[in-house]
Length: 455
Image (cartoon, rainbow, N blue to C red; front, top):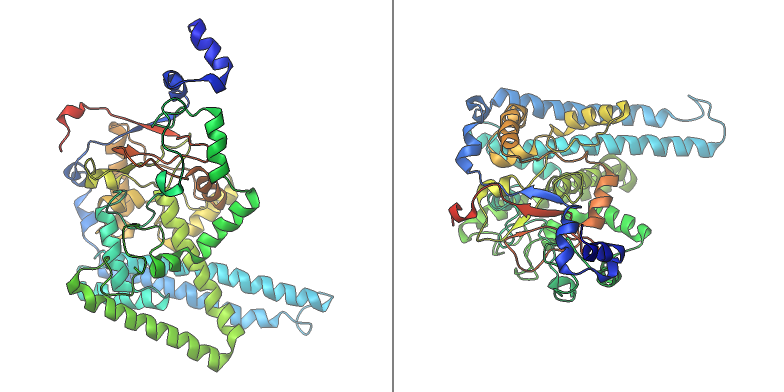
């Protein structure tokens, strides 16, 4: 190492862009895929493209069985937590025990409600059966039961699959840019575009704009999980900012839909109207509290899992795992978009308790997080065959130095990622999130001659 470089490293505040290569050693390298859709599809075993109606129906009935069992157990045994049946001492203890029991029920019912969402999700992709009428019937019923406008969401979700991480065309989780945060433009004397070098004074300036207190971060994280799903459906939050302010999944003329799809939106709206009417009728018939603890609490948990799963499968920013990029339209391909997602162990980890939690979550949610890459490569694969596809796709990716395996998906991981994914640059072919100090954890590298890249 030269004396000049040594001096610079001793005083970080005097670093210039010339030293960026030194800091590159501290960031990960993301191998930009040059695989084609044919490359990915060709390794998937043929049987994965053949959904079984009876096998799919078995998983659907399995979810109904679990949800019915939770409901029966809760309504049968929780009321029995009283002085006549069990001795707990102070009356407050009985109220606390019933409160805890109802919340355990709400958590489990909400988790299996996510499984019901996944059944409808498979149906929307044509992966429930080979029969479109069956798929749409099951999808409409399951999604309407949990307050999801089936046909409207089916349309936008398919668009997301075709344009995953396409900065101009993707729908959900579109990153905010430097200019949208009103951050100062790139100063080449104090930072580089890759985010591998940022002068200390500029880091402080970024932090003043972007960094929140731990308490506010935790509250904001929880709020996104609780209301994020409806914010997306009703207000198109985190979608393309070029759309009109009043854009949502319930307006047939919204830019989310083509003109001929107005009937699909109308049918979805009719289903949601029936859903809302059923809730209102139930409150009048049984009272607010019984409906709250029996249906609304599990419903909120299901909405939480929808955001938790989709967000963590599509957002990564860490030195341990390869952060996922977003692509400008001129370099985007379907294959690159399909690989802009991660497989994660839902609520997993190294301990025995973590593994038990992960197993329960996989059973409840049909392994939606663990096989998400295969699902994006080909969404027609039913969830119970996705493991077979995943095994072959993983082998292909390993040969090309591509890693799509993320850290276990936990609430702490989600909070950490929220803190590390603040903005992307306004320009660039391949863009990675930068944190509250303006630093990125990944840079794009290419294992092929870009002169041969298809334009």
